[in-house]
Image (cartoon, rainbow, N blue to C red):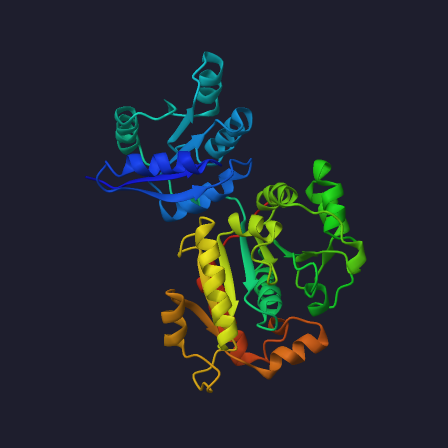
Length: 391
């Protein structure tokens, strides 16, 4: 029997558990993704998971916010027209069912879900024509960098990652969500006049011209926006605001790179991670960093991430370890997670930071590091085959 794979969107743990329980009775069936919020940008995460599981269906719980959930279904179907969508609610009044069908839902299941009806719906999912691989989507991708402690080089990796993408003519936005460090601007020698607070104030009228008119643009081509520089001027930029902002960005730009600092449990950083194609957990070989990585990965897994989404990156990696450093094998054994990539140490990094320019901007000065780092970008993004958005 073919595999049956399902994505589940519900803010109710009981509903998600009910779906998992029903799947136990279906051979070769499993949940491949759970979304704990039925938000308007649900389609971004759905498309990302469809890349890895192109035959998966989606079940959406309407009970928390029927109107919002139906809009989320509509957006998901617009983004992936062949996606098989099941909606579920405690009530099946005619108006709601019709609205669901108009939004593109294929099935409606009444809660509490009956095993026979669920099994029948899964059978129709299996027989439905399989949609095209979502990798053909024209939506941009987010990449979030999170450091396990200060000084591991999270900002440096994020800045240079965005720089390489911009050098490859991909329209790229770098977002600094480290409200305390705020180092992205320093590393590229920028003094932005406008910040995420202006983004928050203009979200309801945001368009590409307005956005590019008030954010900084690096000479390499990427756009930069971050928090206010003065600590006392920190205003309110919520996870809801970021999700709305991200929905705008992925429609207009090829790549969005996020420096999340160390704040893995921060609501805004988590919102960025949840809509990211990859979350890079940046560590070094020192034991405190590895211990924190263990905690971070456990937390991300509890929040619904899978091991495929979490990428461990060892910065300043060397095979010549001291007594206070872990080997690659020790890191992987401790984290129960493969290391995605190792970036070697280089004096060119500090030199570039002191000059307030990305080290990839001067390829001759950091030749060995530049080559390795571009290999990292290739592996993280699928290589140079990325095609820039066209107007």
